Length: 129
Image (spheres, rainbow, N blue to C red):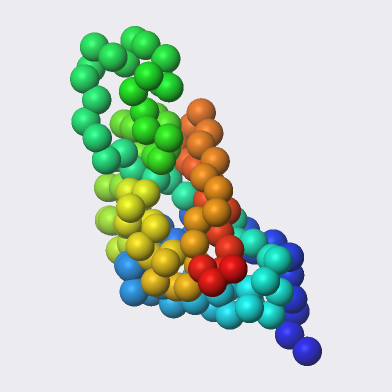
């Protein structure tokens, strides 16, 4: 009998793969969630910024200029993107790119948790749930 978990936590795993391989990894978890539809997948990843921020606004509270759907500390997120490309052949993704990979795997983002550092967490469930 296969193991059936209630929570699957991946930290910095999806970033190490190109889109097609990331979909394969997440598809395996979608299969596990079909066995236990109440289970969730938590992805702790860098979600790179999609907008350019006026440097003058950096002196204001981050909530005034950082999207709710990206990681905080944009300069570090971009640096980590370059590291990921050169070291793993994978990539950091924007929210839209993460959502695309997650959706293709049969999952959907149920909640998005933003931290005061450069990572964020996405709580995923089955797309047909």
